[in-house]
Length: 288
Image (cartoon, rainbow, N blue to C red):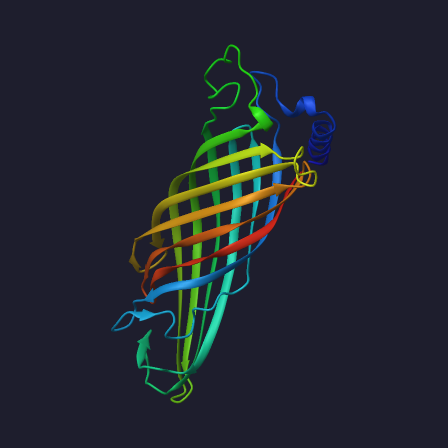
C-alpha cells in the first residue's frame, strides 16, 4: 500500500509540473485523481410531520430554524468515471409556549403548554457518475475515433453531461416533551434511499483575466428516487438537487459556493415526514 501511495503521489507531482501531461495520450484514460470536499451547509427543515391525527408543520414545534451543518465527500475519479462517498449531519431544536394545540407521536400539547422539541437528520452514502457526453473533447465518447481537424476550445472550455446513481442511508430522530404534563415521546427511523439522475459541469480558464483564479467550474445535478424504510412503513418518492460555482486557486485547491436540496416522503412506523432540508453551502475542494 505505501508503494502504491508513493507511486500515485509521484504521478500527481509530474502531472502538476508538466502541463503537457494534462491530456492523456489518445486511447489511454486519464490518471486516477482523489479529491476531498469539506463544507459548511446552512439548511432549514421544511415540510410537515404526518404521524399525528393531523399534519403538523415543522414550524409548530419550532423546528424550522436554519442551522450550520457539516457535509463532505471523498471522491475517486478516472477519466469520465467518478465514485464518491458523501454525507451530512443536521440537528435543530426548539420550544416555548405552544401557540395552538398539536399532537405528535401520540403526545398532545395544548395551546399555552410549555414544550421542548429537537430533530436530527444524518445521511451517508455513495454516488457513481459517468460523463456520457463531452462535445468539446477530442473524442466526444470513449467509443468514437478522434475527430479530424479537432482544435481545443477557447479558454480551455470543457462541458460534460453525466448520469448518476446513488444509494444512501438517512436516519431521523425526533423528541418532544410537554413540560406542563411531564410527558415526552421520541421516534427513530432509518431509510435506504436509491436514486438516479443527470447533471452537467462547465469549466473554463480565467487566469488571463483573473490572476488569482485559474479556472471556474459551474455545475448542477438532480436525482429522483425512492426512500425505503428499514422497518415498518411504506416507500416514498424523494429528490436531490445540487448546484455550485467553484473557483480554482491552484491545480489542487478550490473554493465553492452553492445550494443543496434533499427531501421527499419518508413514511416510517413511528415517524413520517413529508419534507426536506434546503439551504446554501460553501466549502473547500482539495485534489491529491
